[in-house]
Image (cartoon, one colour):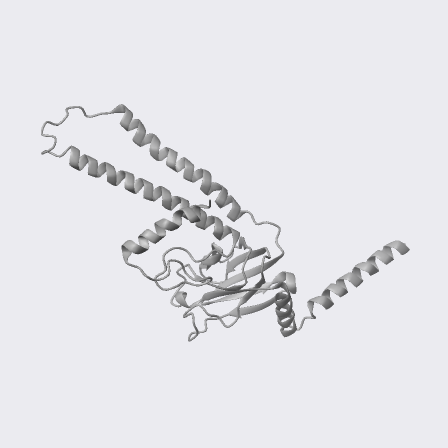
Length: 285
């Protein structure tokens, strides 16, 4: 049984206690009204983050209930009316060992689970292609170096829905592709963040940071700059459209055409012809 399924009753109880009747989780790719919890995971990284979060929620709930029970027990059992003659000792070696070893054990368990997750997030697997992201005041610039290095800028569409999340140019990637993302900035600190991907990486001027994602569901996913970068910080959203491989290839060729580049199939054919000529020349020698 997954940790997410185990923790679901805790979310439901919180909703009932707080009086929320709206959805407990956000719809895929964007926030929702009365949201409680993460957006639906769209990458393996976010699935692991959600599972880890749910596990920590169980630990927090157990610790809170235990401490509350101890406080109530002490208040009722050892108040002046119930216990008019107080004990005279001031130390209890066994209790001191327990309240020291208990938290240490909890932290060890959390560390054993969290450190592999951090390693998984940081180790970029062999990527299908790379996208370079550059943060500007106040918009995003994108480059696809493995598809001819065509570039485009992405600006907020002010009056579109969902509000403050729609851009005029989307980042487009194929479903199930492993995408390496190189992130930098041209002026001040920015941060490229997409909640449904479990992805947040600072864009630092003069430095290139690396991260990755693998979107497993077709759809539109939104994020925003998550670093205070200036007066229009709230107006530089991120929109990533996950499509089929065929749709992605067609989009790439459209972008290449706008940049004056030949279609990808033509480029592949040219590379293959050049390779064949090199092999023939080597054989002739």
